[in-house]
Amino acid sequence: MPLFSYRIVDTHGRKLQGEIEAESREKLVENFQKQGFTVLSVKPSSSRSFASSISLFFLQNKIKTSDLLVVFSQLAAMLEAGIPLIDALKSLAEESEKKSLKKILNMVTQNISQGDTFANALAKTKIFTPLVINLVKTGEASGHLDITLRQLVKYLEDVHGLKQQIKSALTYPVFLILFAITAVIFMLTTIVPIFAKIYARFKVPLPLPTRILLYISDSLKQHIGIFLIMSISLVILFLMVRNTKKVRLVLDRLKLKLPLIGPLIKKVTLARFAASFSILIKSGIPAIAALKLAREIVRNKVIEMALNEAIFAVEQGDSLADALKKTKVFPELIIQMTSTGEKTGMLDVMLEKVARFYDDQVKLAAKNLTTMIEPVMIIILGGIIGFILLSIFLPIFKLGQVVRG
Image (cartoon, rainbow, N blue to C red; front, side, top):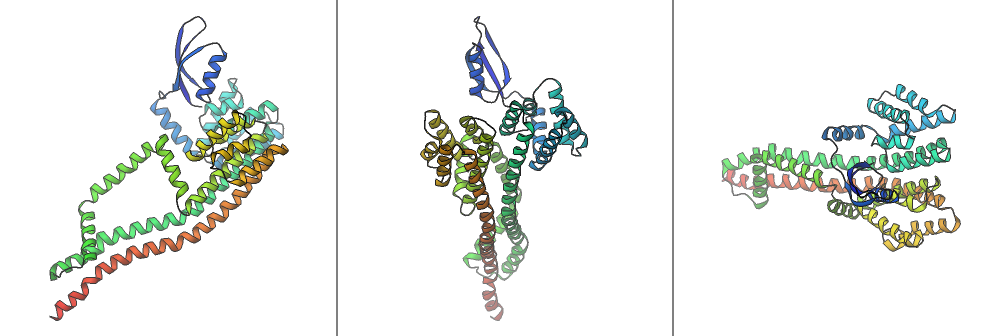
């Protein structure tokens, strides 16, 4: 959970300040007010130590969805067999061959030993998403944690499947792009300079394409260091600002408008939203709370903002289907299925069908993407290399005239 710094006034008029973890700023303010405190300020805290932040970063990146799939599957099976939760976690930690996973399981076990619930123990690791934590919390409250974990495993399988489909769809295009860049740089820095020396020896007037090519080649060779420094600086700058609200909004809008890739990204996002919303509703979490949690899963600022509008509209009394329709972002299929689900009391079932539909669409789109991008990339690569070769060999005709003369 995020860390917040706060300033409050207690019932005796004393000013208090400090830091505390909470699900959200709104939830923390609400909790303070319920206890009779007057809230002066609540804002995200940045005081976490640099070392702990770095450690958390590497730990998060070492834990994969496939790891969580195995853990929760085994944990559900152990609970179904009647093994106590803490014993099951200890057993999983001992059997785990992955150090990062073993560390997290030990952290969770220790937190539970100190009196935390399973959900709170997961939250304190800073690894698990709010969706996972809230599902576990619901499972504990209902007394059917094993069933909830099975539902969670099914959800993680769907998410993992979507990730793999996107990976397989983009691997080949990315390889082609890297190959094209490498081939062009090699030709500009190795082959073109050889021909440049030949043309300089004969002092032949060069055509415009050749002069342009030689200028690019010469500039690249002379300023390769500056080029690398600027490239690395731009990458670092991008990594620093990419998570700011404005930059993320611009990037996410751009992603959705990209030819070929944009529609695929939107289908993946809608599939994730429908799947997460469905499992939350199925677990008994109220619709508005489920919608807020599902909003954190989509990872696209455009759709996230649309969900903010929808949440506000639902809180004002609109039906969920009407609220989604007002955003003008969600396709008619989601709106119609949501409307049917609300009328029949089977919202979770309808959303699951939507998730399955978009999952199938993603598979088809991923297959088509590879098929369509391959000839496009070959044409682009062929055009670039063709221009280089043409520019190199154009002066040869004049060289022949000079030699004959």
